Image 1 (tube, rainbow, N blue to C red):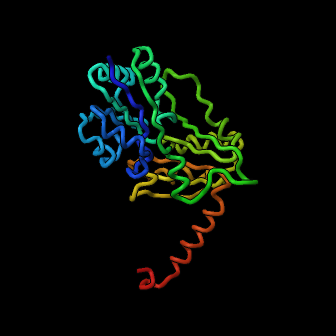
Image 2 (cartoon, rainbow, N blue to C red):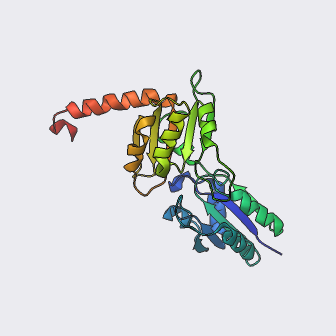
Image 3 (cartoon, rainbow, N blue to C red):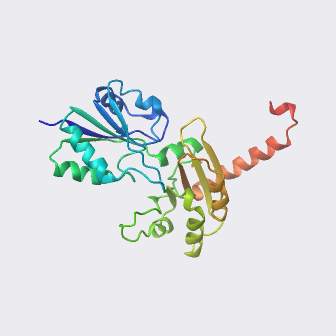
Amino acid sequence: MTGTVYLIGAGPGAPDLLTLRAARVLERADIVFHDALVHPETLALAVRAEKVETGKRSGRRSTAQKFINKRLIDAARKHDVVVRLKGGDPMLFGRVQEEIEALRAGHIPFQIVPGVTAASAAAAQIGVSLTRRGLSRHVTFVTPRAAPEEPANDWAASVLAADTAVIYMGAGLAQSIADTLIARGKPADTPVGLVEDASLPGSRVRYGMLRDLAPMAALCGAGPAVIILGDVLRETMQQDAVESLVFARLPHRARA
């Protein structure tokens, strides 16, 4: 007999964006293998579980995927409820398919619990719908990052074909992203929003044009960031500029 492995999305960061199903599984968990950026309050729901960090950070050295796969299989042969807790939604840029295939090969039962992805959290935070009637009917989620063993990743083709694009794990490649898209025909004045630590109290939002992406990204801290690209941002950017101008003109006492 073996236990069940639950591949759970922890959401974009804020613990209260965790789904009810995820919370209930965590309460029953015997062991939790979690990403590096999962909120401590989310982990605290697993009150009786052993917690093992399998840190994965974009562009940084992290736990080998094959080793994680083996740990999940070994744990399922010892425990009833095994959780693999991933940031965002496990089905988006989470390498979950490799874990699914390993579990199937090991004849380990598993269930997938979706989570709120960073694109949804970022759009909600800035109050901009990624789709909009008459303006944005095509949305693409991409990442320019690829492992050395992966085939060529033509992420730019998807961005160029979409009305709105959300770029994951792109802040560290901002200059390359801007140069590539502009060279392939994307207007340099395409609106861009960069949301760091979406859904968390310390989140930071910056707006600019595609040509400004690199200096915008240079101001980011250590938190994960997503890039939103498209005309759906234009009105919000204009309103934000007006509000900033009004604030700058207020007397010092009126700002308090």
